Length: 629
Image (tube, rainbow, N blue to C red; front, side):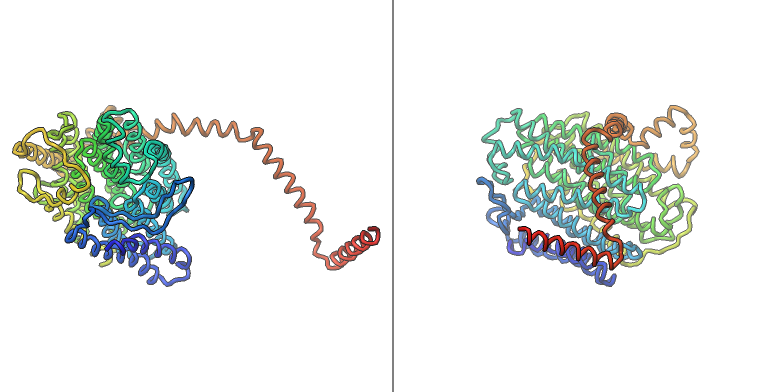
């Protein structure tokens, strides 16, 4: 089966090349077939390989397929080798399966866009880059995919480039993630210097023998890799690009948040978990950053007006839960929540896109309302996604994935009461802003007329994602629910188990507390935005409360801080430096070049007799020189 492995990334890449080279001249139906079909075929190949992997596990625990040697320089010979194990299989499943549903949805959503082929070309390249990232067997190839998703995010966030704000959002995402990417590149140099290789299996095998636990070099390396993950996964302090990334089309937002770029940091830390285990300090920092991020992003989501920005801050918060789990050493819990989050977040973004399309591109939730009966399929699927995001007990997949993280935050080997308290407070806030979003969008009076009903190509992916948002959680029941732990058993061959401080029997109390936090959040939202909305108006009448509300709405002032510390000084220096000596050298070269061009252009008079006269004079000069010599 490993001989088919190359098809998984090759099919989206082939789709990209076809659409990039000939998409403009193709009928729209062929653009759709190539764009969505290539990713769908990749998903089918993934299912064939995945089923074979589960039923007949390879003796080595992985499939590996070497395609060719990338380069051979002074003994450094990285290869283009695809490596599939339990961890990468989960990511490949999410990328291809959810990516295919998003592409199918996009056929209808983008049908009237003038750059239809460019959209699908970029989306195919996005999927290919993420697949390359998770299938790479060495860090150099992984870094190629890592930069590929950064490029594609820039192209797709700024897809509607006619609007200057969209171009700004794309540049912001590209520049901020470059900060983390630079640190990660330095980390790769450190790893190569220490191990003499960038092969991931070799690094993970050699690290425990070469480095002692707590060694400073292990901490430095882990923190450099962490910096890369913070940029791609939009965690503090590099989280500011993601809310503005909502400038792109809704399918782009779904792909970024559910299946590609934002999850890259989670994959990197999980893949390099051995290095993080050798640095307890780095692991603690990962947990603290995750907890802090889920906390601040939750409050920001609670104050947004734009439905897509609510979901953007929600993603930052949910990725924060994954980072918290990674920092606690709860590796399987982090990956389980990644998978469940991919289902319900793709569902929520696509359903939000259907709402926005139906209301003639209206994003403001306070201008929506009354859509419960007008868009029934969208409403019920959105409600299922919202229930999973809010971790509604027992009936939603999100409950089972988030419950593990909350439990490990208390009872895990690295868990603390403070981390648990932040996580449970985050669960309350998540339920509150999720319920607020549902109430404002679908209940109350209709404030904007419905102008477009989503067709089946948009609703069928919603129904499929809604099914998984409800049922996928049952593959991994909590410790005290029974023996069904298929997901952690599957990942155990790659990721270690976290040792608990206490018996799982005490988990029931914490599940009840988590459930109470969820219901309290939903009830609070019901009171404030449905039953007694005047309370919010009274809240805003207080000057302090209004300032606090604006502070949360503006992302806790991070953008203002960065503009003050970095953007404005750089612009100020650039303005002073724009006519320096170096610039004058280039300006001088330009002046001379333009002068020569103008002089030579005088010879182009357009008069035939002057051209003939020039030829005659030239011939006379040449003959004269020959006679003289």
